[in-house]
Image (tube, rainbow, N blue to C red; front, top):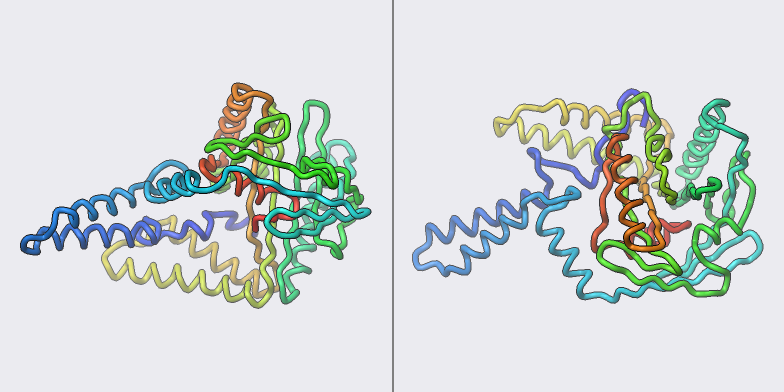
Length: 354
């Protein structure tokens, strides 16, 4: 996205008349059941109860989810195994991750030269990664790469994970040892995770995974993740980029514009006015369609924050600090309750959960 429009709400959270699509379906079904119970003669009481349950499932809850979605997450957590396991193999500079599938990658460490923001080198690095994504978008099949920032009390390291065969931009050096460190594994030794509802037990420590849900409240004069990187508590930051192939990208971009335009026409014909939010969203999608048509890449982005602690109290304290600082910086995080295992897998180098 260009700086003129900026980032907006994720396409997955598309709304119709102010509510998400599945909420509209639940409301229509719930009202239909209650109306039939009121109008029909000798209608069973169960029909009214079912209508009330469906309507309650459409009510919004925390993290942007509805009550029905939260119930589905809790049910899925209660009925599946809480043990996760993955293996890592190192072959020279290449790393192969076995986690519900096989992912091959090569890790590159950023060569730091002091404070990047004073030299302007961070802009050059971002442009190089953008050029990498634009070049990969011309292929028939998309690619996936990730960038990981690992902070400790002593130092900070930046890892770029690319598919084998892809060429890293200048300023990055191949280093498989850092990739193994981010994976938390030793080549040839399996890693086991125990998933709890709000955190994970890893080897010798606890971990909690957050996901950035919304960037739109970040001030335009600040970097999107600048405030988060100032957190005093050590944490890992994972930015995953999934590049949509060229022809598919154009179809996705055009369909999004058509969907929003059709919804706007429908809502206006029903008597609802066009809000400033919907206008901005339409402009953003129209600009995205133009950029994709001009050869720019269409990306699926996901940003994960992994907080670790030696004890549960330590994990809670560090998580609260990261949550508070993210909120003050304009970032909105999702807790990921009931999905800690799948989110931990998705944030690993190579994106095995994608």
